[in-house]
Image (tube, rainbow, N blue to C red; front, side):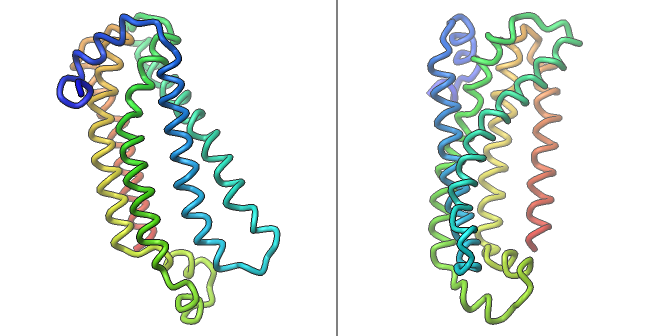
Length: 207
């Protein structure tokens, strides 16, 4: 529970350990949940084109790409933080920082569980046929598949996860790169702001 109530102590303790198994399990779980969420959303879109055989494998292809994408996004984001902190005289190996940075994905795991529940609940009740009968443009159909309640629910979940991420990123940078917390928080906040802006753009796109 320290990761919620005392993240400083949490990252300080884990920065002294040389364990790659737990970080790997965390990212594997994150990627698995990402692929499940992707399957649920892609399966709904597939209902629009049920008579096209080639599209039947789309949900499974989406799952594979999402699973791989989870690991890639983790590596890229960790590498970006690591490179930026080089210019702030950051210390410590990339391996150590990579292991510590994996723990910042715990909020994402919780967020994805909530997103999977929300997506399954809202999307399983969508009447695809009635939407198709009212609209013939595929882009508009896909846009109308997602209820506005779900879009705002996803935004609120992503917002909460991002804010939590910012705090954990800052402590991961502090102990993984030996940089004072104030500077670490500024770096984390910039990335957090970018993430929130992308989420806002996503809402606008579906309104």
